[in-house]
View 1: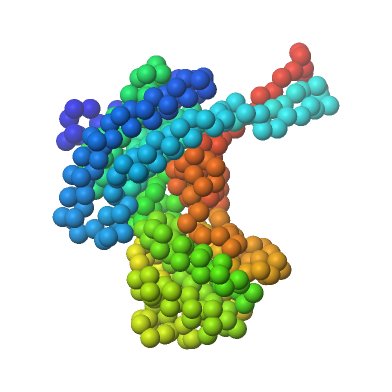
View 2: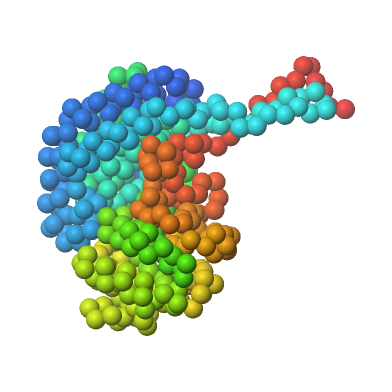
Length: 420
């Protein structure tokens, strides 16, 4: 582990240790996992000054790299955000332990009693960019679900992730759980990512959390299964039956609360019947909030920028939004199908039939009505935290919490039962 010049050897050793730890974690008691998470939360808060100091080094690195303001916001840790991580660890700790939960049971005429029971996946590899809080969230959720985890944070969050990881290890130590249950790749070298993607003997699933470039790389190169967390190309459709006050509150919050997160709205679609009234009011409010609006048609007011072809289906992660009028709800649905990423999409309407049509005919991981898309978050879904928003359709979808990091096995009981 000391020779960081030999990346294949370093990663192979991380994988070996994780596999051994996963075997112990699979039957670790709920009480010990709870104790580890509470001790880790206590350590995070006790070491908050140290974590914020480490983050200052990362912020300097990010400035030198020329990161955008939105990406710098993702990277930033202050006392409130450390408190958020602490609260997340405690929330995960207090959740019911998913391991061993009986999902279904039945008896067969043959005399067999069969149970489908939750079981850990094994070893999870998490590759993420910028946001150092993912270190705490992913570590906590993997531990809660009985999985060992290998974390590879972004190069820009290297020092922050190390400081947070040390607190997680302190929690494991306090609960007498294997310290290798939560490991952090100890180098910025990109070769470590390539090695992770091919550790088929050690890693059971890879979770990439980042931009299109990272997720695309992982999907192309991985030799192990992937939970894809793709772009958040989030649409808000304002129906002709939208309530103006609700629409104003939701659209502004969805775009401006935090522009650099995957639940931030990136495209505003407005029914043509209200484009020159409510739609114009929404665009004006966005402009006044400092948002660059790339618009066309009736939404192209003074102060907006003409939308280009590449503005549709784009994740800005910045104070920019695309906007266009649409003929009707079906045109909005067609636009989202063509340009969305299957992450989160929202309809603003008081018409139940319109909402039902939107929900029925779109297949995004998260669909919302009259609510800010910034709620697309595992913590807001009651999961305590999330490892990401899975946009694929196999195994896990939407916010990935502890329960989504399990598989199941069948427990079959007989009484000397034989098959005829």
